[in-house]
Length: 179
Ligand code: IMP
Ligand code: MG
Image 1: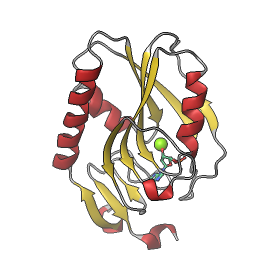
Image 2: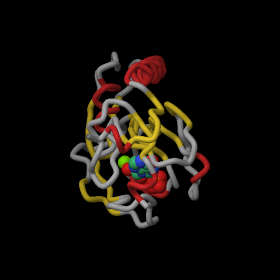
Image 3: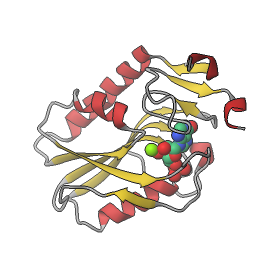
């Protein structure tokens, strides 16, 4: 059972659903009449992306990118590698990058810089979780679900060593699992 590895539930399914609806409402307000594309950063954001996109009321494109971050460890290296690039050309589009969690900022500062070079009409970041205490590189966040303390969390797409992504809630992983 995965449940016995969880120290504490941080956000229940109901809390996540409510917050995702609030974020979608903000996006719906901000993007009327725009050429919106949601870019999900795999794999962690796939659950958030799937829930969010179904609450967006405007036509929008979706695309996926994959970057290497943690591997099997629990802190990022600062070395970012694109393992799957976008299929769409984002020139002239209004891009929202959808992330599961903003931690050191290494991954997203690199990714946003890269996407900006492709001349989108605009680009904003939407992250479900933000761990500001761990920031090493500054990143501009436009839509943020929850600010959380410095703990390793899993579930709702987030993994530890590719496990726990399918938990429907977000929980703090027991430290003995990864230490
Ligand atoms: P950053 O480059 O340090 O900001 O790392 C961001 C990426 O690290 C996220 O997209 C996640 O894949 C992963 N990550 C950071 N913190 C956690 C966590 O608490 N649980 C699971 N994955 C995390
Ligand atoms: Mg991720």
